[in-house]
Image 1 (cartoon, rainbow, N blue to C red):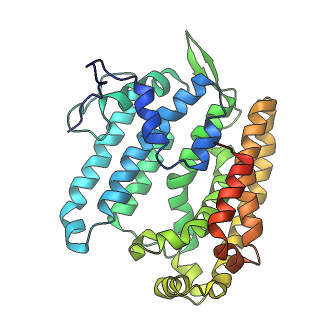
Image 2: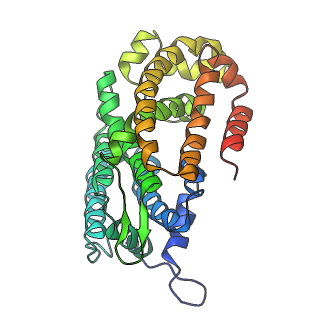
Length: 323
C-alpha cells in the first residue's frame, strides 16, 4: 500500500525531492549526467528515473533475490505489481488520476511528479512499457540463450531508459505547453545502440558484484558463455580466487559485440548533435566518455581492469562526471 510522503510538519513533501532521493540512491552515471541538465529537465529525469527505480527494485532486489520456492509463490503478485505500475505510468502520461492510489507501486509523490512531467510532454510512454516487458521476462525467468534474446531484453532494460535521457537532452520546456522535442526520429532510434554498448560494459564492470548473487542475476547470454567455454560457476570461482585472466575470452566476446553497437551508436549520436546545443553535446559526451574509457581498458586487459577495478571506476566517473 502506498502513502503520501510528508515532511515533519505534516505538509506533503515536494514530489521532486522525493524522486531525487530515490534516483540518487545508487549514484549511477546516468543520474550524474542528468544533473548537468537545466532545472526543468532535471525534474523530468528525476520523475522518470525514480518511477523506473521503484519497479526495478521490486523485481531485482525483491523478487529475484528470493529462494526458488518463494519466487514461485510470489511470481503472480510480482507480475500484478508490474501491471499496476504500467497502468499508473499510462495514467500519468494521460494526465489523469492515479488508478492505483493505495495498491500501486508508485506512491503519490512519484506519481504526481511523473504526471507533472511526462503528462505535460510529447514523449510517449513507450520507454516505460518496454521496461515493463523486460521486467516481465525477468519475473518469468526466461533464459537468455542466444545473443538475439539478450538484445531484445536490452531494448526494454537499458535502451528504453536511455531514450528518455536522449529526449531530455533535446527537449525544450514552456510553462504553457510543457516539454517538446524537435527530434526527427524517436528517441529510441538515437539511444539504442550506444545504450547497448554502455550496458555490455556495465555488465563486465559489475561482474564481481553480480556474481555474488544467484546465477539468474548475471545477464550474460548462454551463447557467449559457450563461446568462451566457461560457466557461471567457473566465473564465480575465477573471481573468488582472483584468477582474472581466466575471464579474458569472455570479456573479448562481450566487448566485440559492444564495439559493433558502438559504431552504429556513434553514427546515430552524430545525427542527434544537430538538435543539441554546446552544453547538451558536452553532457552527452561526458556520459559516453566514461564507458568508452572503461571499454578501452577492458579490451585486451580485462584481468588488469578487475585487479584495479574500484580505483578505475572511481577515476573514470570522477574525470567526466564529477559529483
